[in-house]
Length: 200
Image 1 (cartoon, rainbow, N blue to C red):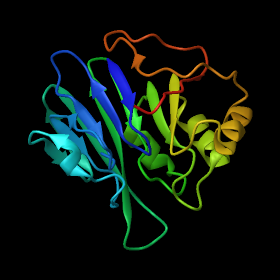
Image 2 (tube, rainbow, N blue to C red):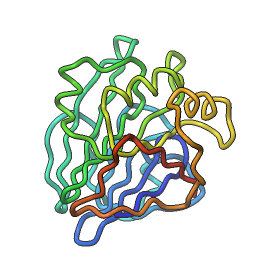
Image 3 (cartoon, rainbow, N blue to C red):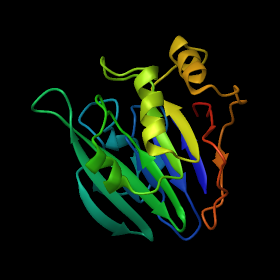
């Protein structure tokens, strides 16, 4: 399994014999290939389908989906504005589960967390929404108890990242271009490990 970050909340997930997934395609100066695209919330910064090569299947709401050997669970959460919504997506690649928290702006309730199930990797925003920041991100990580957490919605070397690392009480890892992990019998961690990705 290869996980890449393209800035904001845009990630790609690539695994042999599975459809490539792109979550929240951002407005970039490059094209990304995908068989599946998920869109967590409305906005130009995360729904730029013109950046996607081909004709992917688009998932933009709650439900359960099985596409290209990938199992996807979407859990809808209401944002603070009554006419907005956010969908938390969990992607199942063999034994590996990846939770993408999208544009979350308030803490999920216990029912929503239970719907996500066991999470190996959590993609958690450090900002994005005005009401969301590193402290809430760390609180969310403690609720999900993932093996790995990959932050998004921050700039390299930003105060948001520094505050998040301090709150998490972890060492600062070296950023990598791609996070490689086995999707069959993925390695478990004794405590949540922080993974930092460079923007591609």
